[in-house]
Amino acid sequence: MTTQNDRYVIRPGRAHDAIDLARLHASVQLQAVTGGQPHPGIAAWVEDLLDGHPSVVPDDFLVAEDTATGCPVASLVGLRQQWSLAGVQLPVAQVELVGTAPEHRGNRLTERLFAALHKRYAADGVPVQVIEGIPYFYRRLGYEYALANDGAPTVPAAALLAIEHDRPDRSAGLTVRPATVADADALAGIDRRLAEGNALVCPREAAVWRYEIGGRRSADLARRVVAVLVHGVDVRGYLVHGSRLSAAGELIVVAAAYDRPTDWPAAAAAMHTHLTHVGRQYEATADKSFTAVRPILGPDHPLVRRSPAGVPRRPRGWYVRTGDPANLLARLQPLLRARWQTADLRWHEPTMTIDMYGRAARLEFTDGELTDVTGMRGAVSPSTDPETHAAIPPGALLQLALGHRTLPEVLETWPDCLLRDRRTEDFLTTAFPQVPVQVWPRN
Image (cartoon, rainbow, N blue to C red):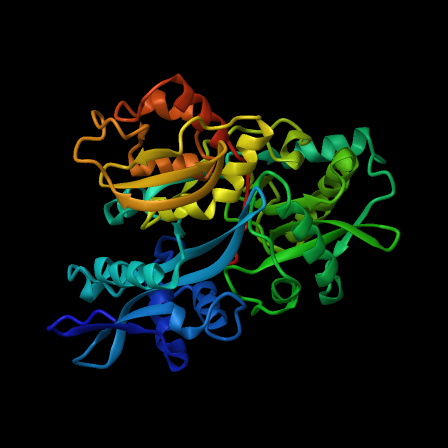
């Protein structure tokens, strides 16, 4: 790990850090909510992360320790997971709980923690890191806003009550009930099938579903309630929502899936009925009214498209980083090849060079089909280099690779995205379509 010749050392987390780290983060996270008091939900989340979370071991924490006291004074954690981009597995680390004790701020501890984190993931072959948080701040650490998150309208509770009253039986025999650990295998099967589609998803194995259903402390801020959609005895879908109303009286929905796309109208009706029932239940036990359902979903999600009209909201986003864009393209090689094959496109040269202004990716073709992607040093002047087919800033390439923006959108907003000719443009337009994001990360 990185050690500075001063009073701080950056080291991996240890199991016995649990009490200190829970205390640290409870005292620095979400203080506007607690009025400056320790946040019990944050403390419970940290304790869960260090006590059997399926995506974290203590070593996944990085800690800045004050050598004068031996105490952690800043830390973060990377939650390792496998996402699926249109069927291609993609190792991802979600960075969470970035915090520094107030009296130790101003010592560049966050910067040093991230430097150690990025060095670790480069060595371990984790190509993508994602984080939500302070607007713009993580751009300074090499992150780019490259994934949409949220953006679905907030649906007033009155609108849900109205459709329930007007059309009381639209669920076609589907019922919704709380999930149990016995449902884990069925839920994992649904996720496996979702991962075969064209979206960006974070599929969960049965062990992860068991943890989500019954493995967290009740106070854990990241705890969600899982419900299943059943027809007879068959589990056909799931709905994941908050365990309490928000401060504004909203019921948060973080995930919804159904195994039979043609039956989504009935599934959505059953989900709406369930959410209305849950919202009323929470209202009865809380000192606030149930005001709305707020889906943390994209506006094109099947549940959102079948919801009553709501109040539009601007999408939030994840900041994303990759230390090696060429390596990311190499991981996506099967997907790029499949997209070109589907469009019946064959490249007319042995290679295609995509320059990222410093590094470049060399795509090799045999009989017009992609066979390999390797990284190389970029050209001194890619805009005039005769061997360069496309010059794409690394942030723009990241957005293209993850399906956040299409090539025409990038060309419109990035003047330094340059293409050799129309044929190159056609190939790259096909390679990088927009991809639906249906990610519920494993936090």
